[in-house]
Image: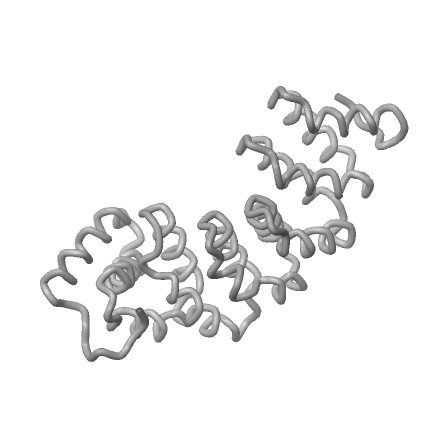
Length: 226
């Protein structure tokens, strides 16, 4: 498909983004990204909010990154406040790929602690990309409040985000290791193990941490997060 962004071709491309066949939607996103036009930014972002196929969503994000930041950033910043979880998560994901530091103020505590796990995970990844120098410790303080949350995949995402902050996250993680919540303590220990030995499998690190916590280890005083 060739997209010129004008007349019939534009209408055809927009219609293709809504086609029942994922292969057609994928081709449409590829074509739009290959010939960027600001008129496609809104439809691309809107499609991100409802697109069921991961590969198509990924192509939609790529297409958006091909457009000038001046065109995409305002729309994406509006989308992170959407009531639709997928809209928020995909907008955050796209912002992480765009990497423009002006998006940092939009990464609020509400997003970092969003009730939807996909949104929260996207917010964690994006925050680590966008966090300004000197703000890493403050971000870590918020992120550790999410330790122990969700299943193993979600916990691994959070651990990677914390590790991505480098040594700035150590004080917050140390406090988490003294939490009254055993799940938080175990997740904190597993994160520290992964940080010190990146080749360690997270599943192994987490199970080992749970055993340590069950035996009463890795807790100093009662101070900590829960």
